[in-house]
Amino acid sequence: MAPTSIPIRLYSDRATKFLRHGHRAITVRKLRETRNAGLNVFRDYCCNSSIHGFKYFVGSSRTRVEKIFWVSMCVLSIYGCGGLIRTVYDKWMRSPVVVTFAEKPTPVYDIPFPAVTICPITKVKSNVLNFTAVYQRVIDGGGSFTEDEYDRFLAMIQVCDFAFNKYVPMQDFDDNLVHVLKEMAIPFEELFLGCYWRNMPVDCGELFASTLTERGICYTFNGLSADDVLRKEEYHQEFDHLGEKRSSENWSMEHGYRPNTGLKVYPLRVANPGSKAGLLVLMKSDLEDMDYLCGGYQSQIHNPDEYPQISSQAIRVPMNQALTMRIDPHMITTSDNVMSYEPAKRLCYYPHERYLRFFRIYTKSNCELECLSNFTLHMCGCVQFSMPRAADVHICGLGKKQCCDTAESILQEQGLGLVDNSWKVLLQSCDCLPACIFLEYKTEMWQAHFDWRRLTDTVHVFEKELNNSDLTSIAVYFKEAQFISIKRNQLFGLNDFIANCGGILGLFMGVSLLSIVEILYYFTMKPLINYCLRRTRKSHSIATVLPYGAGGNNSTNVRVDWEGDPEKDDPLAAAGSAPNMDE
Image (cartoon, rainbow, N blue to C red; front, side, top):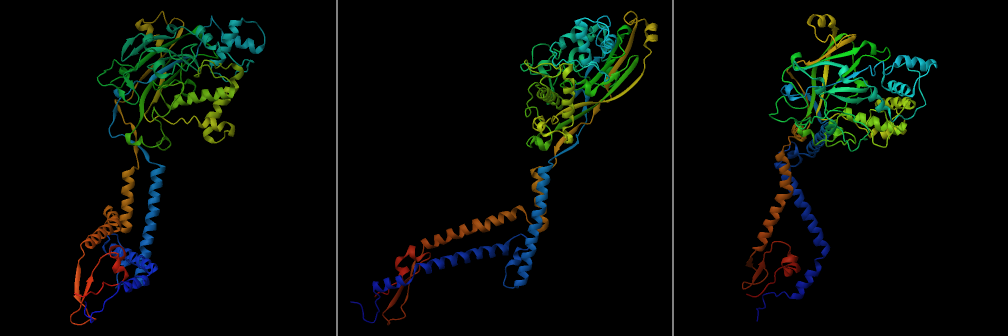
């Protein structure tokens, strides 16, 4: 039996003490400990942070006024950083692309020689139709003419470029117009006298192919074939718009010419500038076929993959003149890192991004032509004969000419904001941005009197062919052997944005990448490590035996030290202190 001098604590006493410790007190204690732990972590971070100003938030040696001052300064710095970073972000989103000069010049043999389209303004021989005489008879209302003459007369009004026409018949559709134009067209050999390519005589029929334009039957040099430019499955099958048959499989606008193809490739190219490495064409016109209302030649210099549009970019070629055109290429390319941006930001389309119904190759010119065709069809119920169209679409007659002109004017004025709301939705679907890889040819022109008669009489050439005719010459060649292209580059990429943000944060607060790592370390990694260490100490806790102070000399107090939560780890300790037992 235990000595009487040793107090014995009954389990009922322990239970009574356990009941006195309520659950509410334990919860409040836990919240207080958690708050203190968070404050300790924050103080530890502020004392050791590399961000300027944070160490002044804490410390017993600083007054409250000093702490408020430094907190205010840091808040203002953060506000200033946020405003500047927002400005940098807006710049990144608004204008991420810049147009600059390329790093090195481009030789002319890397690009194709320009396509040259020539249109005879004299559309018909006088023995087939005397347009001036028939026009006067129709306007005066006197005289008679056959049905064929009247059809040819109507066809000539469609393609002849004179603005003082007063005759507008009630003819809404003219589906036979192109066939009439082809039947009465002047034969090819009566227009082209001679052609010279790279200072060598070449048959003009090998260089030029027929092309249907808004000025009637024209002839194009170095243009791509219909198989390469047009989606022929979407087109009508009544007649051909492009007569070229040679394939351009060894060239594309995006990748250029294939390596090791040389100069015998299509589209044609040259290795040098100057007239000896260019094109020379001699055009003639019989005096008896010259018409005061419709006579002469027109020409256009354009990209080989573009459909020619004479009315918008025509060069008048007068007779008895030597016309010289020196070509200065203008090329825009785009860096690969710009492709990730939306077309609205980089302001251009890649070929795979913009589908055209009638054209396989996307260019701004082709897109605008297709848009004009669609809008004319929607507004007038038909399209002009040279526009791309499907099989079930009518060709507009002279009765619809005013409607076609109005549709073209509306399309040209849409950028001015003068278009009615009824047309805006349809016109916005056009969205004809430039191609991301774009080539055009700037032209320097001059002309001089061509005294060809004295030349032919002296050297005795073309005397028979030029009897009772006028002659003109067209020379086209590159101005320089190289040119400086323009390139779209990334003005403000992700790396630039990060660098700007880092510079702003470093200037205002001394923040670096390691400062962000510090925040993650002090508020995530370090508390987790401390928690794991406490758990480890708790699992290795031991009991210690101390002298019992309340009893006699023969009594001891056994105390067990627990680390951690006493409710979970030692239910007896949660109810009170360790029991006193007789040794």
